[in-house]
Length: 214
Image (cartoon, rainbow, N blue to C red; front, side, top):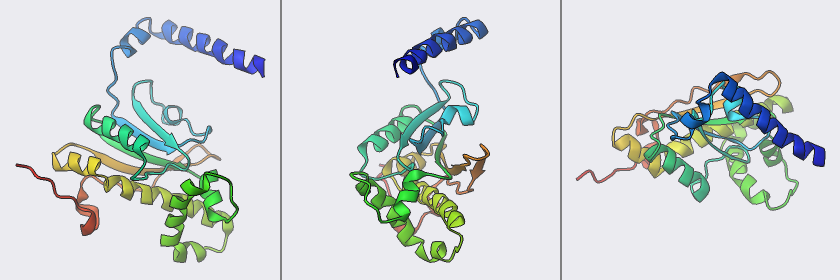
């Protein structure tokens, strides 16, 4: 275990040297600030590294990760990240990226208690409840699991668009797109679910917030 820990620090030194060899000014330039065009809301799964799977460089992606890439309106951590990304960094895209084989989504399909995370998984179970008819008509369990992963991402995209943070940005004329993706662990390919939202006109009327512009 100690050797693995030591290797992490050694790997860091090698990585630093590789960056400097390519660009001696790399870290000096990086330290001047960040202006990423993308906020990534993804799963905490260690097999889905945001920057790496889309070939992004340090400084290009602002990242928030949690179990099963959820957008929960009472989650102050997520809301704080979103507010900073939208209102300070002025990101132009927010991507909710789930992944096939997600353990959180799989656990939410069953009834076995897994501890305190049961309370978090409740949000995913709500997604199942809303789409139960479609899901239970899929006989193949693997295919049903994959579709549940996709539906979970689609619901998070809607939840994201319904936040006052995103809707205020749209009301102010800010260029901001919301997107849903699913990453394939078996092949490394990202599937665009084409749930792109650029204003609140695609939301149900009850979710369209009105802001005082005076």
